[in-house]
Amino acid sequence: MLLGWVTLYQSLAPFAAWFTYSLLGLTRGSHLGAAVEFFVYESPKVLLLLTLIVFGVGIVRTFFTPERTRRILSGRRESVGNVLGALLGIVTPFCSCSAVPLFIGFVTTGVPLGVTFSFLVSAPMVNEVALVLLFGLFGWKVAGLYLVTGLVIAIVAGWGIGRLRMEKHVEDWVYATKPGAAGADEELDWPARIRAGGDAVKDIVGRVWFYVLIGIAVGAGIHGYVPENFMASIMGKDAWWSVPLAVLLGVPMYSNAAGIIPIVQALLGKGAALGTVLAFMMSVIALSLPEAIILRKVLKPRLIATFFGVVALGIMLVGFLFNYIM
Image (cartoon, rainbow, N blue to C red; front, side, top):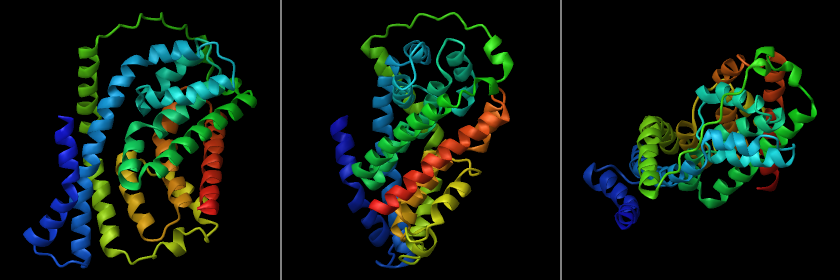
């Protein structure tokens, strides 16, 4: 099966060229030809990579249930806890709808507030969908940079919130909630873990494939029709205001990694700076208005504003840093 995957992956580039220029008869170098070739090549490429990585991560996640993550973090002192929280955020199943129950479960069992926020920042931002798309579209260096900087933001943001001692800005009823009884983790055999990997593919790829195709379609349009270096004056590293503007534009945009990363790839190809587009992508994924509305159930407005402010500041620093060093 793996051999078939590799063979199929390696045939994508010649197939895209044949489909675009031989079958459809489009002209090489034309705007439409470039856009169609981009879409026909990137769509199956990203979906193949996504399927493989999600399957592997689905197996890994059978070892890290939310209950087990809560037990690992419970009672940990900050600093060490922030690092563990950020790392566990990568492999623990998470979506915005689970933010409230996870938050309640963490703080009521002794997980420090700052450690909880390190987890809440890392889980949506540094996930397998983001990493596999970045790897597939940009290579391992950009994916690695995103992984490291995302973890640093999660660790530092959680540590900073912990230092501010903002427990009083958690809604009173949260701390009055009695922690639920810890259920025993079911030990799975390897056939069950492999089935869990297959279920993860059906669940995650089944939910995001449409956003992947939309994002790649938008990226194909940018790739084929936007002039070279057009974005340099708007999102280039010489435009100092581009990073904070990218973060401000990203927050109200509700999208996931699958929808935004192909657009980011196209923007980079047209002259946008890496730091600016990374800041834009991080703000879209990690800071969304729907998540703020959900968290309002358990957090008072001042803590939500602090959370958004600290994370946004970290994202902007990352953007400026990469624009400076790249």
